[in-house]
Image 1: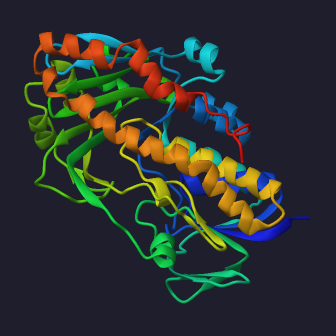
Image 2 (image 1 turned 30 degrees about the vertical axis):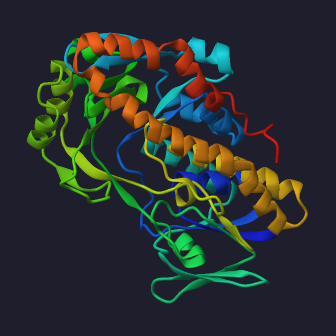
Length: 398
């Protein structure tokens, strides 16, 4: 027997599925509506820091995902032109010892598939594909989702987990402020055997330089390498994960960078490019029977590697709030209150890291040595990341 209320979720990505799983495990009647006709994530990597591993464990999927992931030994900074390295994090057993959970690197399709399988194990028919939301009818006694083609769905509560261009957000709150950051990103997933032997390591590298940076880390037990490069450019402003670029253009953006950076680019089967837009983190994302989750309310630049993790945390905390408060409308408000400060701080921190990765002092090794000591030695790193990694979705105050 399912609990009341009936909950609709718009969006079948990582955040929507995490919320669905959190609620289904607590006995709620949940229906997920996804615009795509097939479930799938873009072929890219995602970093799951210890707070994310803890949240996935709360959802009952951590061990399964861990088996399909990588647990890198460490993360290192490397200087853009000489390759000189500095430690960023000790990972592996050190992360478990300090935080109780490992730092994983995960192939996004594997993360989504793990969540989807867990949802369908509880509720085989809960996911509805080909359901593109066009409008939301919010009333005192319920909520209606309207879809392309004229169909609709009725529920007691609605969770808008439909991403950075959220239709639910625009329908309910009427805004979609986005500004170009002056940066574009290149991404690729590279079969490990295409890389030089010395680069096939279970290590995450963040290459930093004036005006740009490149991140690479292993996925799927070391079978593939994820690459994402960010460069300051203002001549291309298309916000899409699905636009294919050219190897030549990407390599030219990183001309003069270390041979290992160029090796990554030239080993890529294809490269995709998109423009980084930024949206201010919402300070209100609940209205009556509707609330938002994940990128719909706190979209972030990826420079703290917390976007997917925050969506997963949202889902767990939302489930806890609905369980704790008899009035579901109060539960939605409490969920927002429990999450807004943390997610806003994360969005601001990610933006602040942009300057730290692209600092002009990094142009020379002498300047880099001084800069790394002041900004990226152990104490500044702990100040910037420890509050993120220690967070516990099951004990945070709601």
